[in-house]
Length: 534
Image (tube, rainbow, N blue to C red; front, top):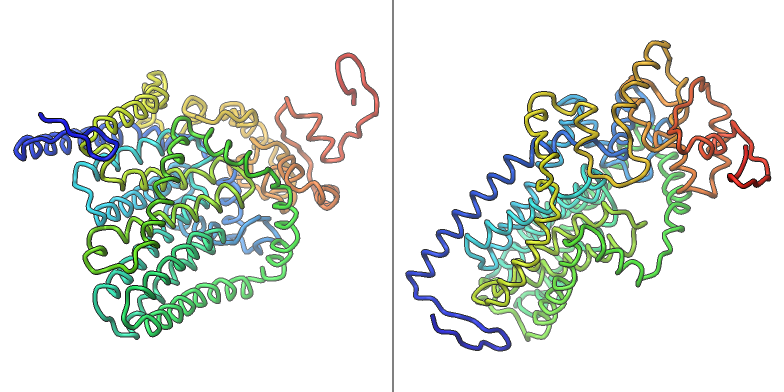
């Protein structure tokens, strides 16, 4: 097996027959590991608890079913796209927690499939594609429930669909001529996908804009009829996006939500995001520290992405051969990743679930480099070391947790199973067994809508378990609302005071703080050796 130096990497060359045999065995091994990973991990994933944000989306969807007005009767920080999705899913599939987690897994599976197809167009062989799928599923099954069924992951699906359409259309334009009407129609469908993603979360506009600018440069430099193509493309994108925008606005207007939506957008959201003031260095450290060791993948991914875009821009034009070689696809995925990284880590508030899709894209960008590991022993060593750390830290290696597989298949998402499967390290995560006991107690009281207030973060699932309307429009925990909207605490307290609440549920370790927020207790300015007295 002869070794040679290729640039700065030590490489080795195998005879064709040995290489083909190794690829076949690698592909088979990847499929076996993927099957075992999903067979073991998916039942555990489906029975993990739902995060409080998902419960809040469900409460907003239930408000629509009962004839309520969104934003007025059920508060929501974001655009209504996620609530529309929850309403459709719950109407079709029911209200069990496993349903929402199954949909979330399917969203991730489709996103993985789209990324694998993208890498295939870059020229990756079947073993590399299979191992990419293994790595992406391994990552997502290791994330805590705060990352699941969130806006950021779900908007990745229509955004990736739009990206696929853009890449295929631009490749066709660069490779041959295309009628303007066809360019406009295909661009309109793409714009509709971007619009759908925008209604889920508007930050998707950043990676969308980056990808559009990259394609503008390449069409202008590589197409003989660049002006006509770009005009048709822009017109189609605008038409598709406008259709999505007007459809959503029409719903808001007809449902009576429009004025309350504007109040949320220009007042509550402005106050919410003005406190996201951590500097760029802190954000960079935050990015690398999350999902250890998976967050480290952004270091090579960032370098690879910048290099890929730079190589694309330096070339005088993209000939047809370069389009089909995967060079164009690599540059476009790199721009999509960098745009996504900017909006997720530097423009948003700074929560863990913002970064899960960015990490998936980073893994795809790194996988797109065919030389890693390719023929390089150094590449294999780096990859093996990274995956070893990831596997050692993976929750499927926790055999006490994995031993719950049979109970998951038998019981489903029961309170005790949820407690044992949680991957959350937040101090305010629910104790699902204790919450079930509280639900039984409250059910015996015969409460009516508006008589229950859940103050602390981990108690809001009671609204769904008891099928009760909250005492105020704030379906999120009151203490969370105060923390994220300190300038509007007077409004929150006034609505609490005007409510018909009779019973308050909170976590005992945060009881004093929550009752102060509610105005039930007033703090005395007195300190003692044991702390503040109330």
